[in-house]
Length: 148
Image (cartoon, rainbow, N blue to C red; front, side, top):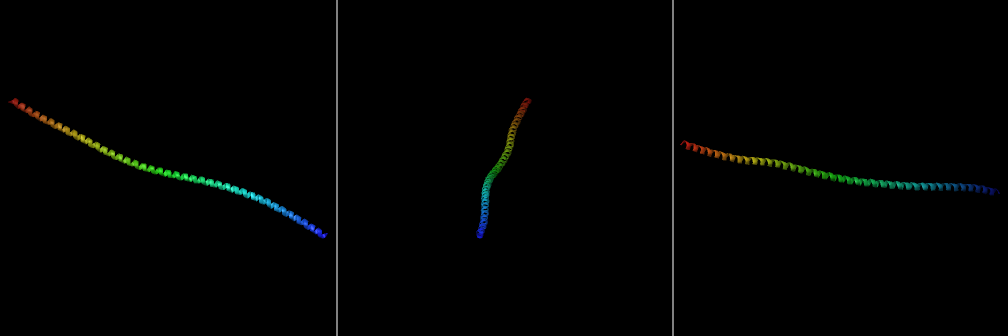
C-alpha cells in the first residue's frame, strides 16, 4: 500500500499540477483572446486613422489644386491687365498725338483764315486806294476844268 499511497500522492500532485497547468493555459488563452481583441481594435483604429489621413490628404491635394488654378487665373488676369494697360497707354499716346496734330491744324487754319482775311482786306484796301486815286484825279481834273 505504500506504493499505492505514493501513486496516490503522485496522482494528487500530478492532478494538482495538471489542474494548475490547465488554469494557466486557460488564463493564457483568455489573455490571448483579450490581446487578439485589442490588436483587432488597434487595427480598426489604425485603419480609421489611415482613412482619415487619406481623406485629409485628398482634401489638402484638392485645395492645393484649387490654389494652383486660382494662381494661374490670377496670373492670366494680371497679364491681361498688363496688356490692357499697354494698350491704354498706346491709345493715350495716340490721342495726345491727335490732339497735338489737331492743335497745329487749328493754328494753321487760323493762320490761313487770317492770311485770307489779310489778303482780302489788302485787296479791298488797294481797291479803295485805287478808287481814291481815281477820285482824286477826277477831282483834280474837275478842279482844273473849273479853273479854266
